[in-house]
Length: 165
Image (cartoon, rainbow, N blue to C red; front, side, top):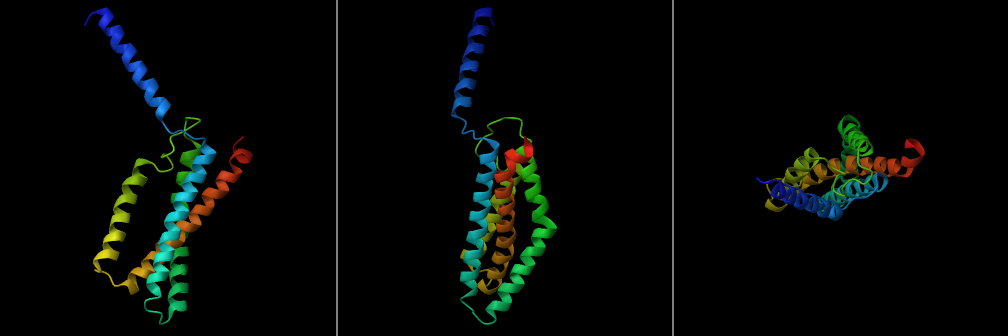
């Protein structure tokens, strides 16, 4: 390749990178923590809403089932989700870019775990393989730690500048 052709390719690549960078939906890290909080709130809220709705289909012992499901969710949070949310918060705070991509509230591993989990939840609910009596408990057990984790993201977003500067 001649020198001028190499120079032209370099200029085109620089222009393409510049255009792509300008299209990236970048937001400040503090707001990214709030985006994560909203996503986790939404996911936890949907699971809790659907779980309790399914529980109402068989209201026998509903308070006991609800309380036990929430306790199991709290244990699930303490044993697993506390560490997961802490890792996501730390990862967001440690991103090198000042305005990371809007979608970087999860890393690739998080997205690859989220998609099968959502798919499984929808399949179990729509196919009727698992009775709504049992599925309702699972939804509440999963929704509880998601909602609690969202509060950690909100707190980190509100305290980001105070703690990190």
